[in-house]
Length: 307
Length: 279
Image 1 (cartoon, chains in turn green, cyan):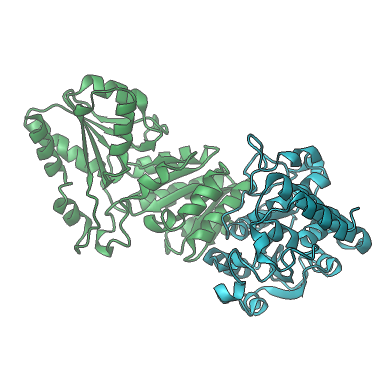
Image 2 (image 1 turned 135 degrees about the vertical axis):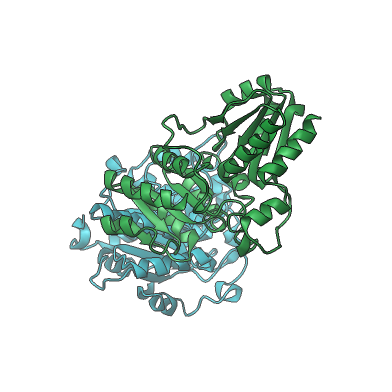
């Protein structure tokens, strides 16, 4: 996802002179092409995310379209008040792009994990929250975000995740879930970097004769009410899947929607990370397995729920 | 947009303007029973120098992309900013009567997006300078020639984000930014230097790479001279440590931190106006 972001940004940078990239001292060499083409519009803001976010706000007040970028906890939680007060309260077109969703950087320890950021940012008025499911969705999300006149948060995984789409999905729209696989009994609503696990889960479920629908529910705010309306009618089970805490993420957003819209909430099943810091060393795939988040484990949990 | 740079200020006129501004702020505090009167009074000379001489602004065209920006980063002095903007004609003077009233637009801290002349919503400290840095950087990127002034309180310099921005501005040689610190030696509940160590404040800004100056913050002539000169050829952002007195202009409020939260009675308003020569 990261390299797609840098590449798409380079293209957009040549098309739109308002686009400025603010980096929190990461992305060594990653943005070389953007920098070479737009030296005045790349700023390494150092390890100072509060200032970086305030600078982005000031730029947006002056007609630019800044993007602030660094590792997830530092570009969200570390500068949360600047996001809330400088960016969202002023309704500014600032795009916050984070790398390292959920347990992407599992090996770096809980300081670098990000299982609460959706919850924090989703609660701020005017903020839109997008978690692209693969590199092509990152490209689409970035273009869509920069067309907004208000704040957007794009939560990326890292680099090298499986690519799901074969091209940039033309139908990508903020607030509209993307259909990935058809199915009739269970729906898996996956947000962000869990999409490959959702597809693996579907394979396992289909092998057991359970017809499974998969969507990339990339926008957590605003939620796709039209899709949810259909999902709660059509499916026996509506499963949210995210590499994020069950407190405040996609599962919470869907639960809130279901309660508010008087849906049959017993159909809803939420899968995400527990309310705990993950303190064991090891890489992302190990952590997922340890927490029951791999596709096969997700399938088993769904199957158990259906029996 | 540096038209005022060479015009000589009429200091006597500016002093009477500052007195009228103080008088208005005291009336507003009384009517609204609003806190932060003393913090507002300590920066009235700075606001007067900025708005009545230094800034290139046009109240009739408050969104002009080439205007100078003034950010009241110490948002708790909103009453002083509101009175300044109304007196300059950004909005009608009568609007000041709605200060802190139910259903109005003039809250205790400056709001976002609804009031002409308010560049940024402030009130949480340490936000104005980073925003100002973004504005100045945008001016550079877009080739727009304007300056950015940010008024900070001394207590505000407790915030780490101020120093992040100080390093950013110096590192990028943002010579069109000027910080004015209203150094009244008090924060909400204690002497500033007994709370966290600010001193030596000028040296700290200089060490951070700023062209730092320390002056009497009630000397309108000195304020005008330094602020008008921005960018001053040093190639650095400019910091003005303005030594001020909290509650300045009213003997029974000066340097008495009870007036951080107290609002004056009708009798005290009258006595204050008399001292300010407004009767």
